[in-house]
Length: 254
Image: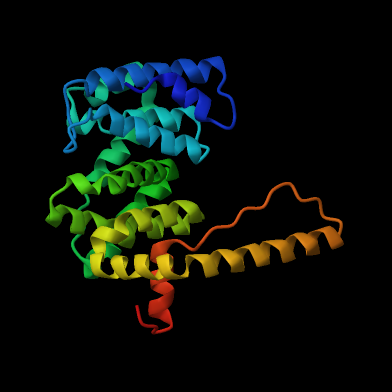
């Protein structure tokens, strides 16, 4: 079983004692609430809310938002009521959990209907943007575990992830998260195209990496020439789904 200490250690900014106490309380309540529940993979359902909380920590969210992430499925999927949450965690966290519960009822109806879904997301965001951030963190773990769903659900959830959640992450300035969402959903949304992109990357990986290294070296030289202190540089091959979209944009064969 994952431990609450993992959450403390994952944060780039150390939690104070009050934050740790709140997280521990949310962890305990969520664990007890989901104790007998299993996911399609056979693992404990608690692992899902724990992974959601970890995603929120990586996004730099505060203890209340992370706690709501741990509790985000309690009203919808357990015997815990809204009043229970208010009594234990107060109005703010309860409001976040309620907002996530409402968003969970939005189902993807195809590309022609996704604008309506986006509108509902933005309405929720206008009330408290943290609701949308938690929902995106929740969706990221769900997208990464699609292999345990039926083919029909895989397709629906994957398309929804790309059309709605990834676009929202992009609009919120979370480019890395957008890429993770798209890449997790890509194999299930467009399996044929995904296989083709995998083959292209495998074939050209060496060339891509050489180009990236050359650009990195040139950038470092320019920074040094202008007396700009370099702390760290990183480089990576473009996200698979982004590469696919780029090839489509330029009408290139895939």
